[in-house]
Image 1 (tube, protein in one colour):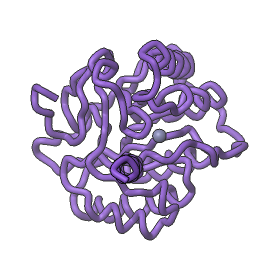
Image 2 (cartoon, rainbow, N blue to C red):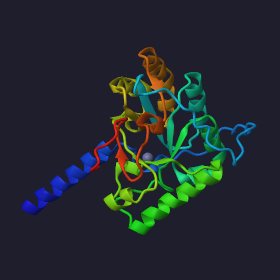
Image 3 (spheres, protein in one colour):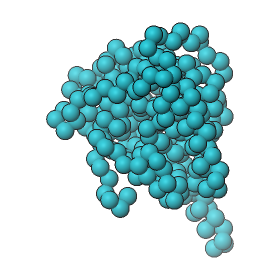
Image 4 (cartoon, rainbow, N blue to C red):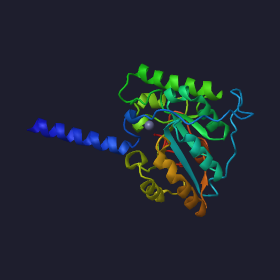
Length: 259
Ligand SMILES: [Zn+2]
C-alpha cells in the first residue's frame, strides 16, 4: 500500500505540475487551414532588420508584456490588427513547424514590431528529451524563424514551462516564463480570459495563446481596460530592459543572480 500511495502522490503531483505549467496541452487540437495570407508589404523583405522600436520607459510608466504562444495560427492576423489599433507590441513564441508552413504571417508579426521567440520545432517537452534532441528542436525552430524574417528569435520559452537546468543555461537567448497565466488554453472562454487579465500588474508577463479564437475575442476589452489604467504594451525585452541569455525571466524585474 505504501507503494500505491507513493504512485498516487506522484501522479497527483504530475497532474498539478501539468496544470500549473499552463502552456496548453499537447497540440492535438491543431487547427487546419488558414484564411488567405496578406501580401507582403513593401519594406518587409527578408533582409530587413528588426524595427526595434524604443518603446516607453517602463521605469516611469506602467508596462505589461503580453505574450502569445503556439502560433502562428488562423487568428493571428486578426490579433495583429487588434494590437495595432491599441499601439500595442507583444511577444510571440512560435512553433517552428507552423512557421515553416506560414512564414508570411511570421514576417508580418516581425514587420509590425513585435518580438519573436522560439517555442521549439514541434512543441516538445524539453525536460523529457535528450540534450541533443532538445537542442535540435530549438535549432530547427530558430532556423525557420530566421528564414522567414531574416532575423533569429531574441527570446525563447520552453513548452509547458519545463526545461532542464543545463539546456536553460546553454541558451544563447533569454528564457521567458510568465507571471500571469490567463488559462485561456483551458477555459477557451473570452469572458474568463478577460476576468483572468484583471490580475495583471505593472511588470507582468502574461501568458496567452493566439491559436484560440476566444483569446482573440477577449483582446479588445483587455487592451481597452488596461489602456484606461495607463498601461503600455511592450515586448518582453522592452519590459525587462536587458534580459539575460540562459536565465529564466518571469516578470519585468531582473531575476536574482542565482536563477
Ligand atoms: Zn506552448
